Length: 187
Image (cartoon, rainbow, N blue to C red):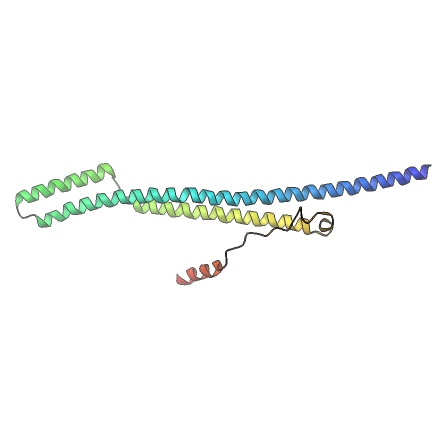
């Protein structure tokens, strides 16, 4: 009778060990799969940030540049009027136009800043592209961990390949490496 208890106990122990091993590996695969999905969502969120941010920045910079363009045109036209002045009255009239244009320039927009706005735009674009690149790298790293886990010897035997398919990392668009080489060669 004692031998049968030992055999039953050994079988139960083996079943429990196999079940805990399987469930641990399965749960780990689920966790890695969810991490991959979350990282891909992060990539999408950074693309959405770019889609939301860039048009707003461009519109702001364009608006500021147009405002400055108008101010500079008014000042330039007023100054150009001095050349056409033929009498003291014309000089007085032109002088008043210059003064009002200059005062308008200082009141409406005291400092020409479109170059600074373009630099800010460039910095924001660079920062956005860096975020996208980081999100892609994080996604690819999570794919590596996931694929390594599901393709391990024991895991590849016990995990269902339909539930845990191999994932493909983010890949560059066809020909993008040539575009980068061309841009670098132009410098």
